[in-house]
Every structure is written in C-alpha cells, then in structure tokens.
Length: 434
Ligand code: NAD
Image (tube, rainbow, N blue to C red):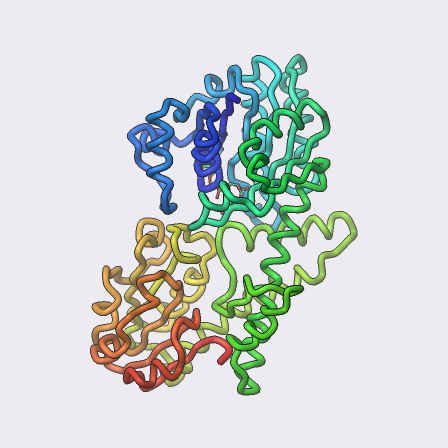
C-alpha cells in the first residue's frame, strides 16, 4: 500500500514509521520545514524510545520518506492519514478542528485517484462526515472514502502500542474503504490482534470514551487517596486491593499529582462539550475535570505544609517535569501548575528532567535547570518527585538527604515509602494518600 501521513507529531511520526515497518510505502508530511529538515537528516524531533532506530531502518529500506510537499505525497496514495493536532479551542473546551479541516482541503486538491482519507487525530463525533463534505466541496470530481481510525498509543511506549495494540478501531462506510484499511493492518490481523470495524460515529466516540474512562479511573484513585490521608489508610494497598479484582484491573490506579499530557485534559473537556451539545451531559466527566484541577492545587499545599506553611526564600529541588516518564512532552503536565506556584510563593526552584528541558525552558521561567538529582538537592529545603523517571526510582536516599539543608521529601508519585525515607535520614516525608 502507498500511504501518505499528514502531520509528524507523536502520533503521525510513530504511525508512519510503524506502517513502513509493516512493509508499506510511507511518505510523512509536515508543514513545519524545521521538522522536515530534521527528519530528512535522520534526526527525530521528539523523544520516543526506539523510534530513531526503527525510522533509520525503514528509511534505509526505501519504504519511508519525509517531505513538506503534501501534493507529491498524496499523489497516487491508497490511503492518506490525517494525524494533525486537535488542541482545545480557546474559551470553550471544544476540540479545535482548524488543522484537520485545513489538511482535508489540501488533501482534496491533491487527490489523483481513489484514496481513503483516514482520520487518526482524535476528533469529535461528526468530524469525519464533515471531512467528507469538505473534500467533496473542494474537489467534486475526487474519488474517495473517509475512515475513522483513532489512535490509542501511549507516549513512551508508542512503538510497542502500535505494533501490539489491544485493538485497532476502524470506522468506515464502504466495503472498498474497509478493504483498504484491512490491507493496511493485515500484519496485525495475521498476528490476531483484534480489529473492530464500526461506523464513523462509533469509532470517533470510542476514542473519547476510552480516554475519559482512564482519566476517571485516575481521578477516582486520587480522590480515594485524599480520603486515605484523612483516615490513616494507605492508598497503595487500597489500589492493590481493588485492582486485583479482575472487573476493576490494576492499571491507572496510581495516586499522584493529577493527570496531564496531550490527550486526557483536552479529550475530557471535548467530550464534556460534545455531551452538552447533544443534550446528554457527561456529568461524571465534568466532575473528573474539576477534581483533577483540585488535585494539582492540593499538591502545592502538600509541599507548603512540608515546609512549615511557606516556601518563601526556600530552595526546592523538583525531580521530573514532563507529564510522565519516557517522553519530552510537557503539554498540560502537572508541573506547569505546581512549579509556577512554588516560584510565585518565593521559592528558588531547581529542576532536573532527563528530557524535559528543551520544551520546559520556555514554559517554566525563573527556574534553574540542573543535570543531576544529587546536585539539585544539595543545600535544598525540600525535594519534590513529580515525574517517576527510572533514574529517580532508585536514588541513594541517604546520599540525597545528607546533602540537603532540610531533608524533606514530597514524593508525589509514591516511588518510595515513608519508612525508606525515614531510615535514610529524611526528617519529613509525604506521599500521596498514605
Ligand atoms: P502534534 O501536535 O505533536 O503534531 C501534529 C503535527 O501536525 C505537527 O508537527 C504539525 O506541524 C503538523 N501539521 C498540522 N497541520 C498540518 C498540515 N496541514 N500539513 C502537514 N502537517 C501539519 O500532535 P500529536 O500529539 O501527534 O497528536 C495528533 C492527534 O493524535 C491529536 O488529535 C491527538 O489528540 C491524537 N492522539 C495523540 C496521542 C499522543 O499520545 N500524543 C495519542 C493518541 C491520539
């Protein structure tokens, strides 16, 4: 199959690289010349483990190429994937479809023969029908179908998720489009990963429902964590105790500083808007959004409490600022709420993050970036674990504590135990929900 992938962000680039690894001929397109130049040089503009190696392999095999010229990529393609951003529209929480619709128009002008235009971006119910309208209006002669193929990959584990998905969801309206999509995902089908064929609207909604459910699960355990703190229970054991129940499952039950990232915040708020528009309010999801904001603010209070009520004039070492480990993505990271609150409270903030600096420098003004957790903690009044990167999971706590002015730890990912921290010489420790 010949495939054009429009957009080379986390989803477009990973999907393009993996589809070329399936044996398809893939051309990835981006409108940002800087990204295209990097990709042509063999550099990966994002941090995603394993992506550089897989990309180089498929470029060398002649199956994968990059361009800024959408027209040449779409010419002769069997399928054109739209993988552009759908951020939150300012002011109303809706998904901003400007990029999707602009891409659809450009694709329409570039189509030369039958192709399936596949939306991989996360889009509200009804968007694929609008994409079809836009293409038909822009190029009335064009021969095409639309398909909805939402993506479920997780940053940090994206290649494995794409190659070994729990399921692939494909929404189509014609047998011809279904065949093309079946051919594209044949390697997965042969390996018996489930492929769910649906109509367009169902596929669109599956993606939002999945993300909203996961965000709800995280928020639920964060609320339970708060109660644990009040009643003297341990949320880690509560999580284990409920997660062992097969009906509940143990994933997404880690109490922490609230969900963030490029998807959950915008997708929950888009789903809430979709519900309002269709007079089917998503009351649970609306509450989840509100509670998650409170969770982030509560983390600031925890740090202040640990420091005797104020961080004014104190030195805070923050370990991890990306929204989760193994990514450089800072979008909606809890650190973007917590760190500015500390800086605003008069703290000198030092930050260490294995990959977050490139994005984070502009987003977190007024902090010092260091390379090493022990140096950051040297002379500090409190150390805050905000993202559980591997290198922060096995710190020599005694060494860390020994260098600090006041050995206090706010472990917002529950990496360590209060007992470990105390034994290592920390005078004060707080986790989440324990
Ligand atoms: P991103 O912002 O990282 O990348 C989007 C890319 O598209 C950018 O490089 C941009 O320059 C490019 N682009 C925009 N318009 C273009 C056009 N007309 N022609 C060519 N290139 C164009 O976005 P992302 O994180 O990859 O997300 C893309 C979509 O996938 C979103 O809808 C998102 O919700 C969804 N999604 C993301 C993830 C994730 O983990 N990031 C997971 C599942 C689904």
